[in-house]
Image 1 (cartoon, helix red, strand yellow):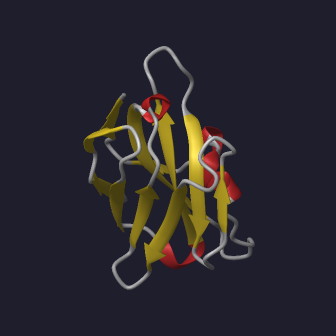
Image 2 (cartoon, helix red, strand yellow; image 1 turned 90 degrees about the vertical axis):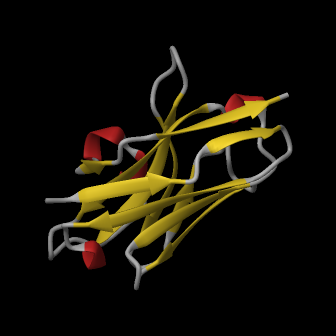
Image 3 (cartoon, one colour; image 1 turned 45 degrees about the horizontal axis):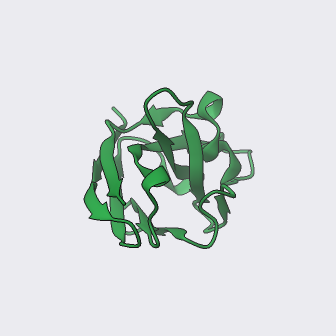
Length: 130
């Protein structure tokens, strides 16, 4: 059974940093992508960053240059380093994963699109105070 376990959320002041972690298990990690979504109250879920198993990445414009997604393939874990945080980054952050068919080319893009996600984490709250 696929599982994504998140950690690392919390509260910081604007300008601060946080790092989120997501440990994957129960699916073929080697041919997949992982990503991070966020959802603030009253807003749609937004795919902020994705990383494919080949290391290629994709970012939303709203976080480009401030957030960095990375992975440790040996640990089957993805990370989201969030710097220069703003109050508008406050949201519940969800880890997500897409498992590709053996014949498909991996890409980070599906891990930023809710409709393509196969697996979701439980979410971790990030709160940025001004």
